Every structure is written in C-alpha cells, then in structure tokens.
Image (cartoon, rainbow, N blue to C red; front, side, top):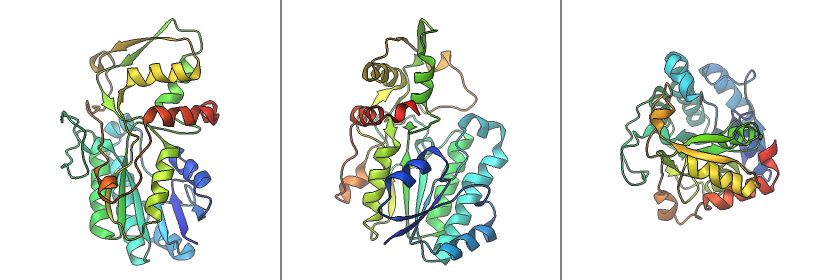
Length: 284
C-alpha cells in the first residue's frame, strides 16, 4: 500500500485529501507537530514515517496578508518547500507539491499551459514560484500541481463567502466580472491526484483545475442557481473592489500535461460545483 504523508492536513485541501484517499495509508501532519520551516525537524518526521509519497499542501495562502508579511510568506512558501523537497529526496519519497495560478501575471489572452514561463506579480505568487523552483531543484522525483479558484468542505473559499452573504439581508451583491478563471473543487483535485499517485513514473508540472471557465460574477450566479437561492448579483470591475495584492486578470489554466500523459480530463466546473452542493459539503 502506498503510504502518503500530507503536510497542511488541517487545511481545506488537506482535509479533502485525507477523506478521499482512504485506499492509501494516510499520515496527516500539520502545526504544531509539523513545522516545514525547520529542516531538521521535518527531516526527522519523514525518517520516522517513511512515506512513499508526500503531498505538500502546507503554505501561507492568505494572498493579501502576504503583501504585508513578505518574510513570513517566503519563509513558509519558499524555504518551507525547499525543506520538504530536501527531506523527500534524502529519504526517497516522491513529492507532490501544490502550487497556484498566481505564478502567472494574468496578462495572456488565452489559458496558460504548463510550459508558459511564470511571471508572478504578488508576494504570494513570487513566494509560491520560489517554492516551485526549490522543488524542481532539490527533488527530481516530483509533481507540481497548480490549482486556482479552489473551494472545498469547510472553506474558507469564495463559494462559502457567497453562501454566507446570501442570507436575505442584502438586496444585491456586487461581484467582480473582469477576472477569468477555472472554479475548482477539492474533490476534483483529489481525484486527479489519485491518478498521478498511481502513475509513479510521471514527473513534472500539471494544471489540475476544472475544465470550462467563468468570472467570479458568473460563478456566483451559477452557485445561487444550483443552490436554489434567490439573490440579486450585480457585476462590477476589479477597480471597484481594490485589494492589497494584485489579482491575475486571466487565471485560466490549460490542462495540457494531463492530455500529453493520457490522464483523465478534469470535470467541468459546473458539474463539480453540483457534486459539491449535492454532497452537502457546501453547508459545512
């Protein structure tokens, strides 16, 4: 049986992976028992459990906080990933590292492929790209899985925020309509990662976002339609909703690597959203 250690197991993606990948022996780790910023401590953790695979979810993902806490962002996302990569390589573990669409600047007019050159603008994106580079350098036996617009059981996510705001107390909600991406459920990501885990000969970078595209406004409208919620939604621009960290105008990720390796396609984002809501995960 493949033994899988998951960093950041208490996070939104980590929780779904622990629940979904039950056919494997799962070792969930998170703070305070796991500290990826301490190389020796994490190396001892790997030596203790001897996993076949490490899925590295632990990260600083609060995008706006990264702008004001740059040192912490790079310590967790870059140095932490380097420590995980070193430990995996030294202990013969395959590494699956989770990354983000924020490694791209968002200026491209078509979806980004795995072979496009990253050019991050935000501190979050820069720190995650530094983490990608550390993984490539220090652990040849790796998968880098880029995700975007993620939601899953328990949140936090845009989907959870919209469901909370649509409580009947607001006549309308303004939602950004000039950013484009691939809404993606943690369930769909878990299924895609299972396929990669079962193909140990594969290495490289993969985009694991759901197929199809939307704006935040379109996602909100579809969410309320599927959930049977009557809520007026008004489209607005990014300029009307300024945030400390720049958001990519284009976060669409092409799943070229999946096709090249003959792996199953990602589900359509609308189908994945329906599955999420029907499984009652949208309410917890």
